[in-house]
Image (cartoon, rainbow, N blue to C red; front, side):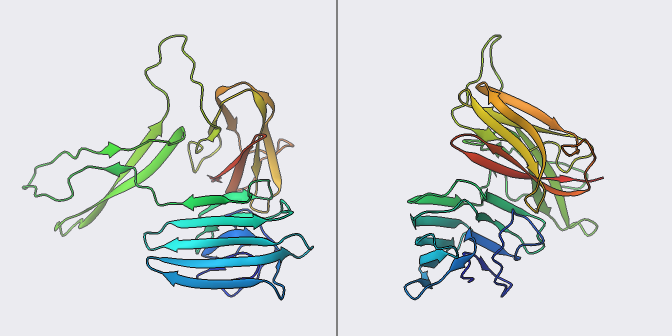
Length: 293
């Protein structure tokens, strides 16, 4: 547990210079409820507790190195893999922090917020392992040279528009192929509209880009519930802006834009992981994409 507002399962680093996730510059196996250059004073407390099926880490009355605060927040790790971030007090919060997680290899991560106005008092953020495939046969027997159909049910309630990927692992006593993986690709979009009908989203949404990984272009879809100022930009893992794709007033509805892997000057950028961020007056959403040259 690092006093700079994060924790890790593998490192004793005390990194205070926050970055967008995933990143090689960030601690590995990271959980960051409020990663910033924080100061633990004589009145501050950082403590942990195991209670039933959860492990709780609380930062109480900690301050930013420049004096803002106090901040009180906690991370709750559940035995089913869910992570709950809760924020009680965030006095004079400076928008210069990272909230998110990343894996051991720094190849996969989730940036909830990076150097933006997102956190506020009495906020709770749940990071959950959601299974959207269910109701199919879990076991059975097939004769030689025979096949059997599996019926899958995809649960897409509250899913944003875009592409989702999963795989089904099938184990058998076949000596040549004891384990096989069947890929599943789910597209969430709009169907069944009559001519002239218009979809009006209820919330701001940012879909996963498709394809991902990509070369040379990828499509990004987003939804806006009301006419408003919108900025959609691409960043590298250092937090540097690479390209602005949208910057202006956008009408309500579903929109899409293509990124061709070039920066603002029109030059091609290198292979790697990039962050794309949709920002409106009331909400900021980020996703990651992988460019392979």
